[in-house]
Amino acid sequence: MERKTQIQAEQGKPDLTITREFDLPLALLFKAYEDPEIVAQWMGTKVLKWESKKHGSYAFETSDPKGNVVFKANGTIHEFIPDLKITRTFEMENSPFGVTLEFLEFEGLSANTSKLNMHVIYRSASHRDENLKLPFDYGINMAHNRIEEILNPQNKI
Amino acid sequence: MNLRRDVFQAIADPTRRAILLLLAASQTMTAGAIAANFDTARPTVSKHLQILTECELLKQEQNGREVLYHINAKNMKEIADFLEPFRELWDDRFNKLEAIMKNYQHKK
Image (cartoon, rainbow over all chains, first blue to last red; front, side, top):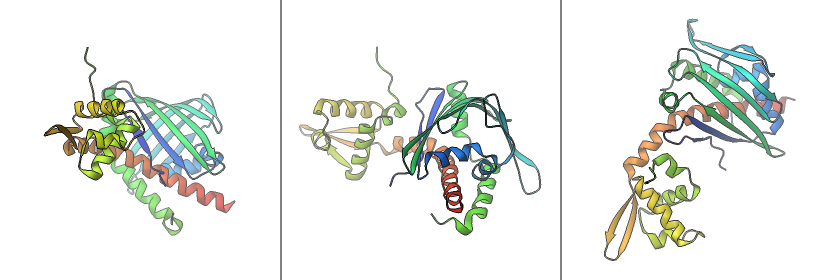
């Protein structure tokens, strides 16, 4: 069963595409993008603000165990159509790759499977490559480890 | 004008990815033996082999009257190294999303 996440990034282009098929009905996949509590769990970050609507905005913040903020990100939502698409900007604060424009498209494949196609556009090809080369951020890693701990008791896939 | 070929363009095509997988498994093959694995017309497969060779993902080797193809391991590794950490980051996130939503579904 091929359920891997795929990345398409042509050399010299300012964009990339992330595709993933899920063993989830379309409505549940979309809910993971709509409900701030669920977003916080899988993104492994604190969600400060999450307005799932046109002209809404969102903000994330991750702190290390000592309380130092290690990751901050925010963006604005341009389009929010349940079970179909989200168009938004994303900016990881203090990062070398700047603001991106993201087109998220959700699609049901069967009653219990769905697909997400995420088209991300950077300011330039070199901004994109900075993001691709970005080594695993400590904050993100730590957040992932924490999620791993939270989920571990029942995380038998 | 010569089209500038690059490795990412090369691996964007499913037939070319299949050729790379085939050669990864069998090490060295002639163009004819590679083409025999596809329904695609022989000249189309030749074109794919040419592109993969221009991108230096494949190496050609003359063996008598035949041309043998094998993978240029160094360049294949470069592609994987460049994109893989980024891909894994997203794969991790999406695996979590899937696990969380499956739990959520069962709780309902």
